[in-house]
Image 1 (cartoon, helix red, strand yellow):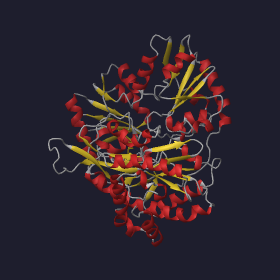
Image 2 (cartoon, rainbow, N blue to C red):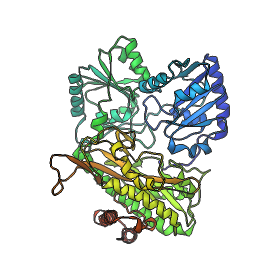
Image 3 (tube, helix red, strand yellow):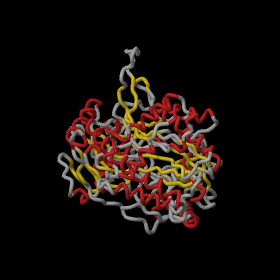
Image 4 (cartoon, one colour):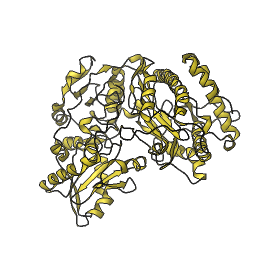
Amino acid sequence: MFQTFETTSRPEQGPPRLAALRREIAAEGLDGFVVPRADAHQGEYVAECDARLEWLTGFTGSAGFCAVLAGQAGVFVDGRYRVQIKAQVAQDFTPVDWPETSLADWLKQALPGGGKVGFDPWLHTRAEIEAARDGLARSGIELVESANLVDRIWQDRPARPAAPVIAYPDELAGMDAAGKRARLAAALREAGQKAAVLTLPDSICWLLNIRGGDIPRNPVVQAFAILHDDGRVDLFSDPEKFSGAPLPGVALHGWAAFEAALAALAGPVRVDRASAPLAVSGLLEGAGIAVAHAQDPCILPKAVKTAAELSAAREGHLRDAGAMCEFLAWLDAEAPKGALTEIDVVRALEGFRRATDALREISFDTICGAGPNGAIVHYRVTEATNRPVRPGELLLVDSGGQYLDGTTDITRTIAVGAPEAEARTCFTRVLKGMIAMSRARWPEGRAGRDLDALARSALWQAGQDYDHGTGHGVGQYLSVHEGPQGLSRKSGVALQPGMIVSNEPGYYREGAFGIRIENLLVVRKAAALPGGDAHRAMLDFDTLTHVPIDLALVDPALLDAGERAWLNAYHAGIAPLIGARLSARARDWLARAARQI
């Protein structure tokens, strides 16, 4: 399905919905209610039936929440969305800078006399609620479990998705599902745990070698699962979805059986306090079953790709690079004419990917921001916001594809016509950071937070920065944003060979332009250096993305010799890898776009 551009929620719809919610809050004897972006599976992207935050407020970002009180309604968003939210919510809602301001801090100011604030325990994790309760200690404010009050007033709420499930080929996964179940069951036995509750759809899909279509752009299956210490799995979902995917060793149940199955378990039962709904551990504890809080056992094995997964991912990225080069050649010819809009660009790019005959879906709604729209970090064009692509402006295009052999994510910022000197300077600083991360070499055991500053240093020297992480993990025909690893100040997970991360520094000037450059990288063991310290094991990155960077925006005078050498080597390596996949027009374009500087 091609990307659509309708606006599903308008700012003017917010006030009457907010008023209706406040009536329900009062009827429950509460002083407030928290509406999160998350669903019961705690994924970044949610189905239409779970888009409660968007339905209530109009905010379409992938992270945040709303705290509704009788006289205030704060919408908490991070640095990626502080420009976007201004255009999406009515004045009845107040944007709140988060995480700088926590829910607890805001509530203490808004309810100085104390009160009871409700939340749905199926939509919040234990870690989230415990942190908020700790912050509210001795304030007189209680967070209390409640029925979902938004669902009561959402009269035309869509049905739960039930897309068909497919088997994911073992040869692409590098291990069959039985082998994965046995491996994780052995880890449970070693930890003295009888079972693990899995609530993340991508974990379940990885474990069982299945994929689905319940969430737009993410080939996942909405389900809950219980992995037992003997390798058996109880799976809870819509059974009719699984007719095309036999699951030996798996007992399939309907959703309604999940709570009773939890109550029948023997403990200790492993539950991830950072991803499982609070309701899960509450049900177990209510039944007298010991809970062992520990990370979802699929998280780390899923992130460390097998040799087969990496081989497949490389092929997927080469195919995607060919589509991107065809697109950029087309854009180079058409954009200077001044007749394109952002929607035209999005449709054309998806068309080039679909022309590969291998695209299953785009990996997220394409971000295509012309001029000032590029400064909205996660901008999504609609018919209402669609802007012409004008000569003299920058165009930021962040996009990706879902292929059976890999998930891609790439950002290129393009000069339409001759760029201004200031834009070139800012772009080159971003490029310096991107190159620094690409060339990074570090001791084993280091995490993304140890590397993040490499991508920011050149910007910092100019008093500039960006309000998002430098990179996120990426799944294998799964979620385009995948933990636990990342390249950010928040990521304390040690990077390991086989992990895939994005490398995407940026710079955004509100009302003027946005700049971001993104490649995907895979962590690998670094080759020994001549005369190096042999006792220290080192890691580095191998680049998966092979698409030219717009040289019209590069000021070579701002690059040092090593940076110029990296950029020239990167560009020189593209044609040998993908030249044979390209049309004659795209090959001619590539020869110019990847020239040496």
